[in-house]
Length: 269
Image (cartoon, rainbow, N blue to C red; front, side, top):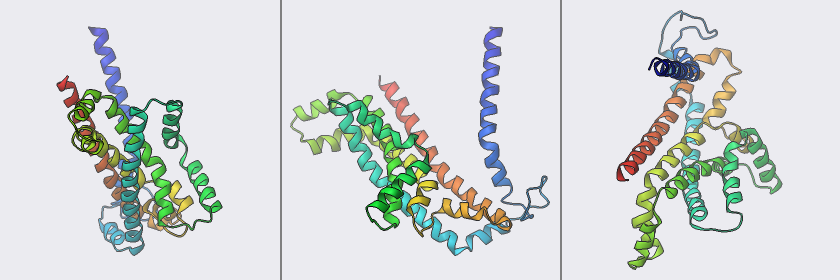
């Protein structure tokens, strides 16, 4: 019993240490969004102010970058939800030669460094003489957003009984009716969770955007450009805090929907 308590205490300490390691840098950003000193990071804060929020919200270039980031994330997520679901269904439902290789290639983009993907996309788009635009950013983001949706939906397919689909077809339903009334309700939460994660990934992606955007600037690229302006550090911290809040919500919802669905499946068994 004493040994178990000791192991439990070590695990709790390790978990606490991991959480601190991950979130202390974020807390520092949030803290220095309220500092009165615009040039240096001093602690304790020389003073607390909310003036930088007004300064940030008055920046038209910030609003333009934010709008572009949201539009790109929404379109890339929509494309990823369609392609990721179709790919997951094909890999799960079909037994063909090289299926595992196809699955590996579908997952590979999420493992590659963003700068490698960005350079590859820029070379391919430039080689095809396609002008850099909003849609080239969407293509770049969709390459890794598809992976997120694919993984979530494929995992749900593997937990779904084939007998439901077979029963629907035996009762006279066509493929579309079976998908609408049987498949979609079963993968719905996984699809939404994958979409939420894809949106969060797309919204804060900087490397792929940099290599595919041309003259257009998304919010992460805007933040990156601000790092060369020391006197704008508090404003940059405010915008970084906005990014954290925007990306944290879909990740929280995705985690909640996934865990709730898993609990429901376990209870169903």
